[in-house]
Amino acid sequence: MTKGFSVVNHVGITVKNLDKAIPFYEALFGVKVSNVDELGGKRMAAVQGLDDTLIKYANVHLDNINIDILEYDEPKSTDASYSNEQVSAMHMCFEVDDIKAAVARLKELGIEPEGEPMFFEEADGLKSGFGTGVVYFKDPDGAHLELIEPKGPFQRG
Image 1 (cartoon, rainbow, N blue to C red):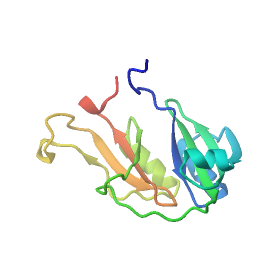
Image 2: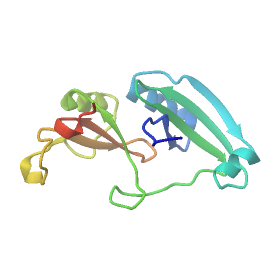
Image 3: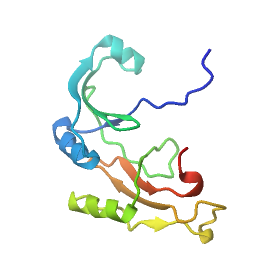
Image 4: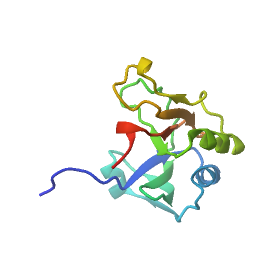
């Protein structure tokens, strides 16, 4: 009997153009994609609630999670627009040891953060985790991404 879900296998990110997205994510992650393939047909469509599907994808293996970069050819992907406060909005957060150095690396890659990193203080309303740094940025298709330099309860383990 399954007690609960405690291990994340992967996160999928839908992009407009897989060939253009791969170099962005390889530069961001610092690793090459491990696999590029396509998948489709009625059986795959059925598990996604679609009539038919054809998905081009690339897999990236990070230390603690896999990332699937997906381009839907059938049905053709459409743009989504959301902000973090909207219900069902999601983002992916990457843990770093030095957020200022990580932001400098983003900028070297031509990625502009949404703002400068902020470091949690008591005035932010928290009870703990002071000194945790966060900054948000987006991929070329607008997926919401975050960096965190965790302290206190934001640290894993």
